Image 1 (tube, rainbow, N blue to C red):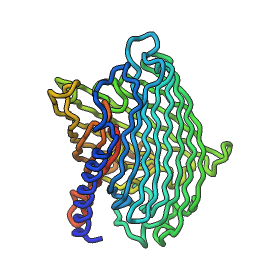
Image 2 (cartoon, rainbow, N blue to C red; image 1 turned 30 degrees about the horizontal axis):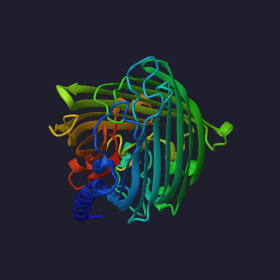
Image 3 (cartoon, rainbow, N blue to C red; image 1 turned 180 degrees about the vertical axis):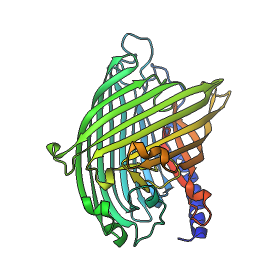
Length: 401
């Protein structure tokens, strides 16, 4: 693809992302237009739903038609155990899309708070059938240009990850986590077929894992925190004892913090995360950078290895409005800077090159303290002359972290 064509696709991506936002907000029955209050009080027990159907764009799929919904509800009891603090709203998001490249994807995510927030249940489900690219393993492999004959293949994948957490302290929760995932590669390009790491694991892998999760959480609202700290530490083990094809371990440590700046609606948020693996890790389950929740400026899967680490600092600004009960407008923006890297082992992280990342985004509150977001991210390719320029445009519900 030529640089000129890439820039054209990038501008089209931004335009279609804005179109997604406009159509979603205009849908009849969406909470953006139908909801009469912006209250987040415990007494507000209404079941809220914000549907959308609109064109969209992602760097992996190109132009697409996407449909979905954000739903939120309150569980009973309405207040936390031995507290007058209300339990935050639980959320369910659905999203399905079909793209100009023939990609068909669907995902569902549940974040729920039960028994006065003594029990939390989270579920992530993702299914994909799409043309994709595999650059190989390591930083240098990710720098290579993509091409149908060098990196292209068709991918069918499924991921189902439930977590059940019990509160053991006002700010601490523990519980089990499970991961059932599978990836099948077809129409593999000669370049991918010749890759030694791909050859070691082949085109089809089924992986089943089980492990434990510890969380420390003092956020005021998980979907859009203004204050607090969040730490998620988990370890999962995969192997034949669960019916999987490969034996390996995955360790994940995610730290996030949120600091209000003067008034509500102005927040400085930052995160640092590392994921490292051990054992016989298949090519599709290596640690990766580039998605709508980490370095929003890189194609997902372009950079992969056994270890990854990244950090992001983001400023979030919600405008004021005298006409709303909360005193805040539905509109806002964000701006962020970040960086990350990958390595074969944790000891090699300090010697590798860093992948820079920055971007801006628009926010619109469709339900109390829940936003639809459009982000435009940039990465290394933008800085290096001669390489193609294709900004990553992301549309989704709730914040990136």
